Length: 498
Ligand code: AHR
Image (cartoon, rainbow, N blue to C red; front, side, top):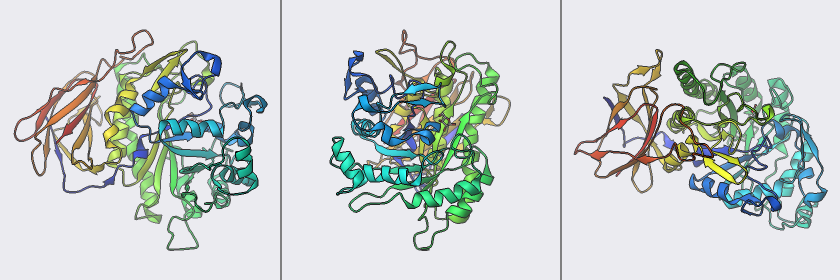
């Protein structure tokens, strides 16, 4: 029996809704087909956005959407994506399959998508092959409310009112696809580029995200923070940046042997989860360095790319990164989101890669069909954590599984404004069920409800069988002192206590 004690008396902080964010890149069938369809596609849409996809995304309350990349961001020239669609310049998407990108989805379309989703905006600018002027004019185009060359251009393209840019990323993976820069070189460019991300009068503040490390690259974090964190006005402790990004993908057998999304052994199941749990070490490694500059944790660790990355589905374009999504992915999502909740004092935003049809997608589409993946269900079950106060949890009697240090059960908890408590728990064992007992440090739960996502480790949804993996009611009732329930092997539960 695993006993989970939820401490209602203290809180490490509020879980930023943005922790449940998403990432959509001009890559494969994420934007085109997955989200944005041609007027003659026959697929129901509103201003080009697939109605089924938008509806499914609203159900999980997408809080923020990062766009246009990824590697694509550092070769994207935003002026090619505005004006009449038929006049927009074509370009080669060199990173992702060498396809011709017609730029029919651009700045106006992105803001329309965010309007339909009701989410915050996170634009990623081009440092690798773009200029300071290009980046600064994009910000002017999007946010300036007055008469200026870019505001007039926006108006000529049909939009008088400025938009709100909530977050702006200054480059992407500039240690790699974003220019193969050294940390020292990028750090200086960051200082320069971010200067021109102006906050115009009447505009809401734009939070600036500095390009951070790849996985455990502490050298990058140290060098970049050393150069970029300092600010001439000491009272404004995070003047140059509001966040530092971190990218981390789970490749079960390493980059050279990523394995299949649906065919895997028990050993690979545990390797995958062990690698997913490594996210906690990464937050500590980089968090410790950030603490030296920012002990009050004013700047956020922004995990704006995370998720599983396998070999593509057989027969699909290797440059499109299309993969299936099983209960194993559900467990990766569950443990990762629990880690983010438990470290919400430092992690202020995270974006799963990617939203539709790419890597650990929450939705997959095929023509007019759409399915919700097991990962979508985890985001659905965890949605009440968004904006809630995280609650510390103490677990007793948690054994290990997989012959290593992998805990059998992993949890997080939070309290909503209504006072109701959400506990999310994952059973990482591929074969054994776990009995879990929840108690509160003060008070006893009077009402309990919950949902369960369970299935054989390889279970997944297909276009022919879209509901193989779906949420069910969790059998749990208060017994006067606490709540007891059973977590089947490879399962995720969300429990509401009030
Ligand atoms: O998400 C796919 C790619 O992974 C992104 O374009 C890049 O930033 C990362 O390497």
